[in-house]
Length: 194
Image 1 (cartoon, helix red, strand yellow):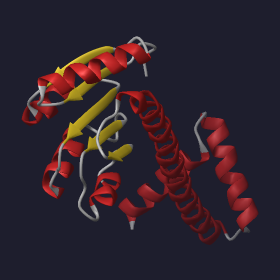
Image 2: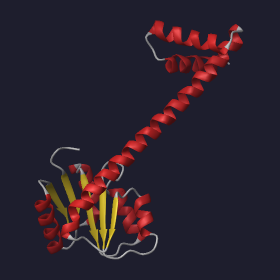
Image 3: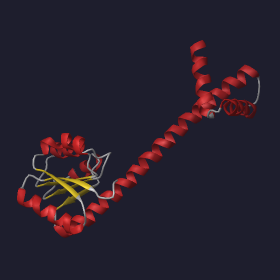
Image 4: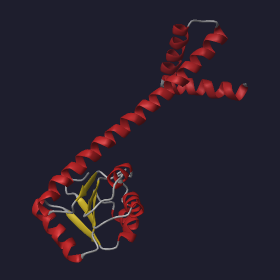
């Protein structure tokens, strides 16, 4: 995120929106854009690519909550949602939709900065976890391909697993490629031939 955070505030009530802007200005130096119409959220997110989205709602329905959360791009940025009242299960639905902070009992100016900080920290933590999970999945898939390639080499040459891996590694080094890439090429070409 940039040094000076850009924030889109979704608040239909003008007075309340100005109160939020004042609270944010008291808390730091932010570039703030107010949206009074939640229906235009997705387009504004796409056009302005804010660092954070703050949504203030009186009593959202499950559909409104999910629509607003998804429109605000919760996988791309922290989303903090302030609601006056919340039906049972809505906070869980908000978190499942990707909202980084879901605060019941509305937005209080003194709580705005700590909630914003918590939403950003939580978003970054989940972003790291998503990246680590994707890396682990990629590594597992590569391991499976390497194992398949080793098995093919072992059968074709009548050699041990260690020797098959050594051959894969030497071929990769000779060609300036990764072992997983050489294994993938071998598995793919064998699939074309078989």
